[in-house]
Length: 542
Image (tube, rainbow, N blue to C red):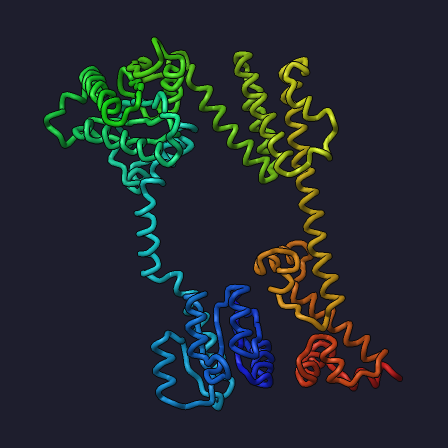
């Protein structure tokens, strides 16, 4: 749906165009009226207008000045000038300022409809325009470092299967790594930030560390991944095009080269950045499929640490596989946590139940069971707090959620968490339905009580604090009826009631049910009843 605003200082012209366009065979339009340029600006400040049909010569502010105001607010808005002034200078000025068309009032309705159809087609075409695509591609190029980092971060936290690895994907991200070749991972940690240093300064130093690593590892392929403000992951591969490091295809030679280079990196960070940096690297190449497990294993080794826990340089794992599968657990928990959180937020009960079973229902160590249980419980408590439901829950529910030992067996704990998740989702669904019903009822009541007032989609949307387009969709989804059809029905019933039980004149009655003039009301009434208003009144009085 597109919004069209009619602007003219002659009310008769505005109302006549409004009626004509309502009955015209045009793409779906939402029509608005303004009886001056100032009133038009008020509409432009309230909502996005797609097309403006305006007079040029108006008192106070003419159409050309209005065009500049339109461009300042809605640059893509299409402007059509409709005027009785056939002056070349106005035509030229209008075209220079970017209006779509210029039509004389004497030309009739057909050119107006044609110009509006052209404007609608132009709006739709713009989204397929090559320039817009080029602009989008440029924005993507500028955002590529962030997109690339987020993709690799997801691969580390949730596994490469979750991220979706392919040579095409790496190329799209502008990454030089080979999707088929194994990696040698390195994890670096800033052991301690200066106390006075805040977020912005830390970010700059993170990129300084990445730059140091990039220079030192310039002879190999490297992808840096900022995991958080403390951890930086480096993914390394031999450079196929560099004869000097051809020997680095050997795991032992590559490991030795990396270890020696990391010594230099640590020294540079200490001397240049005044930052203690601990590093841990793999003993050998790791397949992409083991990347997330290797990350968690390396992070765990850094957390445990040795010595004073600063400026450490450690080696991790046996290379191709994590030891005894000890790193697989964090990857699995991270995946299921994200899925459970998304399911709770969006109200998908089956997904929530499946995620809880995968998180808590495994047969692993008790410590992992506790971690999974309280992860799920905390997500549900978080949902309760964000939604403001705490007072509506039983007093002991939160205590039971935080009491893993209160369940005799793991199976009972899983069932309790699943039942609680299902209950919260049902509660959320009920609250949504109740809130939606209240919105629809408020809109309907407003229409019934103010049938002669402003019942534009924008005015109704402002009443319930929704976007106009979304209110239209929500109303149809909830009632199965278009909002505009409901308004027509209310106006028609009110008109019939007034015709039968009042002595209002037709023009007074027309105003009472929201029509600008008697002629427009008469055509509306005849269209829906087959009778004119006076005929209906006479038949009803028999």
